[in-house]
Length: 311
Ligand code: ADP
Ligand code: MG
Image (cartoon, rainbow, N blue to C red; front, side, top):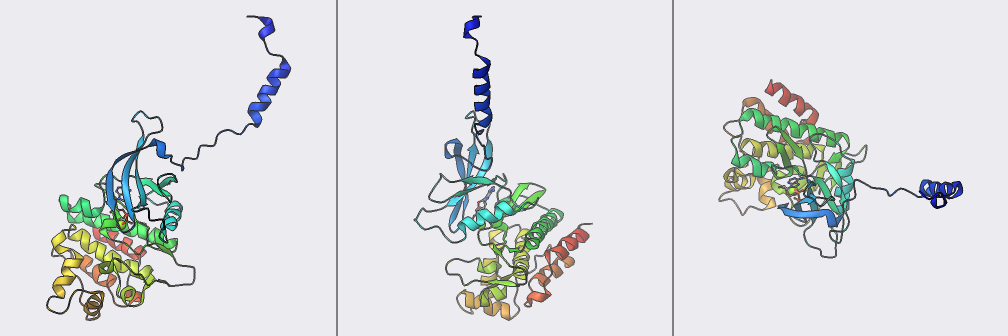
């Protein structure tokens, strides 16, 4: 009310200019702050990493969203090769059958943690044994895996760890591929990525040329898809797992080593086709496990094949 308390035009002008030139605080939706992450429960763990469910709740009133956070299992001072690579790769991928990248948190441990969307039904390995999933839905899941993998291959990435444990379930009708921890880029003009790996490798999902020569290609992912398809059709029952079945084939021969596995595969022994499996699907499985990588189908042709079977 007091005219002498009103600012002059000059003061107003100064204040407005101040507001205009001051940078607005930048809110990066991909940066997650530790103080807003509320730990709910463990979701799973693998070789180097562990995945934990958190509620991200910046308003601190329980209205936040659930996110899955992948971080290093032990903080040993050494960050494994590929850890940051996994985050970079997932960030670049955008497909309905690939788990979505949400961001990073750099405050959770020694190295960045990956924040992904949370898929409430866990992996196919947790989901399938508990439910009665009929053949049409198994084949629908298989087709969705092929769609996600076809996209990954068009971006020239080989997954190298395709298995039921790495396929996540959003709901009863939708699955997405996860775990890009072993994924590698194949430069244009090249056919494979060569690795010799010490430590635990998912050998029962590996194609014969991966076991013998460490050659990973788009075709070796197709072999692993064949094993994943086998897992889906056997509902990931532990007593019919690839390990159990290969061991049964090897009984009385030698201990189950990688060498023994190579010998079995060289003698053209393969996982048994599940009883409930239609002939067309059996043919697909056999093609995926062809000893000659060039004779295996592509994810594009497999997507089409599952479409035709489903009609
Ligand atoms: P690792 O590289 O250690 O194998 P994964 O990325 O495969 O890690 O995750 C380990 C397990 O955690 C998965 O098998 C699955 O059970 C669970 N998991 C991973 N990501 C998610 C997610 N986004 N939503 C729900 N569960 C997940
Ligand atoms: Mg995994």
